[in-house]
Image 1: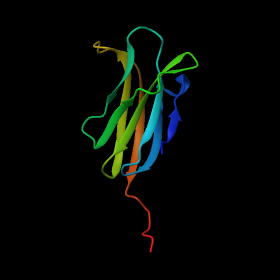
Image 2 (image 1 turned 90 degrees about the horizontal axis):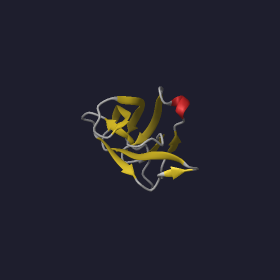
Image 3 (image 1 turned 30 degrees about the vertical axis):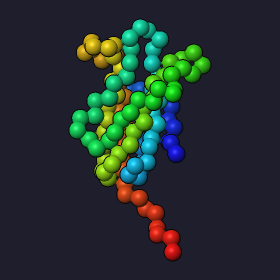
Image 4 (image 1 turned 135 degrees about the vertical axis):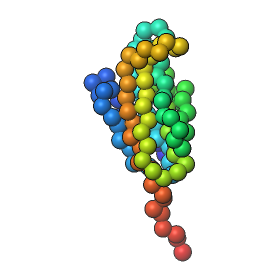
Length: 111
């Protein structure tokens, strides 16, 4: 069960917010320019959030998109910064922040 969130070019300078339980995956898709070598990279620091590229989402209506699956293993509030740049070059072309609030599951035991 994913929370699918599309980010459009006008929204990139802002931040996206998600509320999840521990272990609940969240799918984030970011638009990527068609220019050669542009990709999104995550600068998350040392957080207990696992970020995995999702290669199943690559092209949508001729516009390239990159997708990432986020899964947290501990409760807390985390900020991840995604940066758009070319391969090994350090210059950042764009960025987007993802704010992730992770809580313990609130499910009640069934008797």
